[in-house]
Amino acid sequence: MSMKYTISFLLTLSFLFNPQLKAADADLLYEDAVYENSIRTVEITPLLPIRGKPDILNINRTGTYQLEFDDLRLDADYYFVYMVHCNANWAPSEFKPIEYLFDYNEFEITNYEFSIDTRTPYVHYSMKLPRVRFSGNYLIVVYRGNNVEDIVLSKRVSVFEDRIGVGASVAISSGVVEREINQQIELRINYSNVDVMIPAEEIKVVIRQNQRWDNALRDLQPSFIRPDLKELEYMHFNLENNFRGGNEFRFFDIRTLNFRGENIGEIEILKDRIYASLYLDKDRGGQAYSEPLREDLNGQFQIANLDDSPAEVTGEYSQVKFSLRADKIQKPVYVMGAMNSWQRKPENLMTYNEDTGNYEGSQYLKQGWYDYHYLVEDTEPFLFEGSHRYTRNEYEILVYYCRKGSRGDLLLGYRVIKS
Image (cartoon, rainbow, N blue to C red; front, top):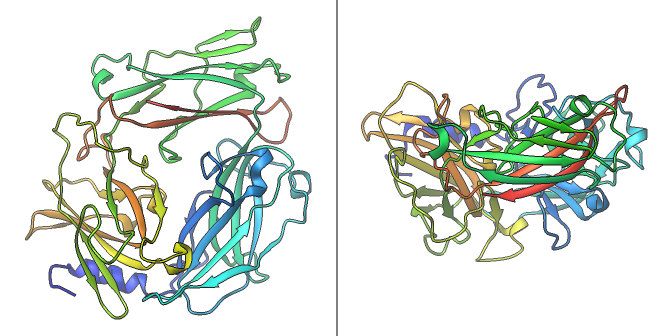
């Protein structure tokens, strides 16, 4: 391993390759989270070639998706799953499992395969998602053996029914300063197929940008109510319905190890480790918008191995080094994307190298194609990326319904639009 890797990078490696490392007495988090360092690459994937988002499922298709993850330990283990129905804010609802599930709320994961000739051995697990009786947010919780307290991962998934109509568009921001950097979401909701008594209280709207929960718009109140048409309008002019446009995603391709994929500067293959360094990234904060030559994945990733198949068990894990040439700032800088669930955690934090003048960090990732951004913990997260109204983003509108006195939120409307 070359000397250009920093001491902090070596410490990261020691953390990564201690598969037993686990936070003591970790409480269940109602978000996408892993509780053991050996758990990697958690995904919801379709069993059949079905179009749609991997974590927003039509209620009629829940049984056609599966949960997948890798365990970097040598031996297979006994894992079980239970599910929790949650409200729009991802707090547990008052519904009982017997109400929202067809089966007893304990599902054993019986499908697993050992990796094939990989430098980092792992066990790949998969489980078909159980069908649910009604819509809403669901937290999938995986635990070890018979101990429900021994949690290894949690994964969010939302199930919708198509009962509330949603019309939406991406418009220019109504703010004078923000019109060049923001994108404004305007929508109209029709609830004629639902028995709604107090629309402003019983209907809740959540808007996601690029499948992110961390910056989702919540508690958006209607700007106008039309009881005669059973419609709600959300046409705000005080930036309540604005997102930063951000910039097109950076990306890299490690689908093959036989040659350097796009944006891979160097690959070092050792007997039991693989290290990949990306080309040096530059600060895009002061640059004009440039339309990319290809569509990106809007911050997502795809597991793939061009050298062998199936990628689920032949894909190699690599320590991927990120470097960003930028001036040092006092705010934390993170490398983020779906690869780390958009979470600001120590392992995603970039460290400024005074000798090189670069921010440096690393992620331990399976072979595939990855999108990412460098985001700042600040009121202007896109300081190093730039923000433009022309950026091609994807927005999802989720419409929840909870009648007065009900015990939980149902997800009765869903729509995807692109800027």
